[in-house]
Image (cartoon, rainbow, N blue to C red; front, side):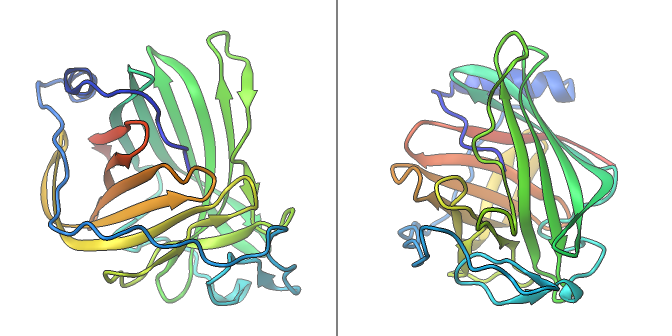
Length: 270
């Protein structure tokens, strides 16, 4: 999962980027809810990482139930986070005060992680047509309908196209890393926990704060959206909010505390 986009976010810049994607003058709005609970505290965990998993078992983040590879299905059809082969989400945002386009694509490829067949997602963040961050994400859904996040391979690039960082890269079962539930099968307010776990590298957590949020983005206006709050012990001064719509997936991301970030869905293909 991409780290927070840092920088001030002029609304006109976001609107211009969105218009460039969808070919119209739609502007991005803010998601709102009436609830503003405190982000969840960090669950207790060993700083050295999760315990090694037995053969046939998945290494999971602290707080989640043990899972066997046989507990997983092949399709990811959770309505809040459907990963349909060939589908792409294109979002307009800003990084360091400059417009960005983020393209998130279900490749149709798979990757085996600890016996679990994962869907491979390609995430490309560009500025002025140049890739500044490239990530391969790995997800799988269990037979109960929970979508799990099993790792990512991420790289950041400078203006010359040279890799400057791979921070945030992790894979379940490697160096004490554990998978986390990214989207519950039946989300309820108050649910949450680690989405990813690797000590010192990947400690994102979420909490469901609303199931009836309103959100407006260039792609459309939605009621009854699912809203989460996200935090990480690696940057305790940052709180992020995300919005999900049934049948679509994530439509918006906004920072609530810390460096300003927004990302709004402008185009959905397939």
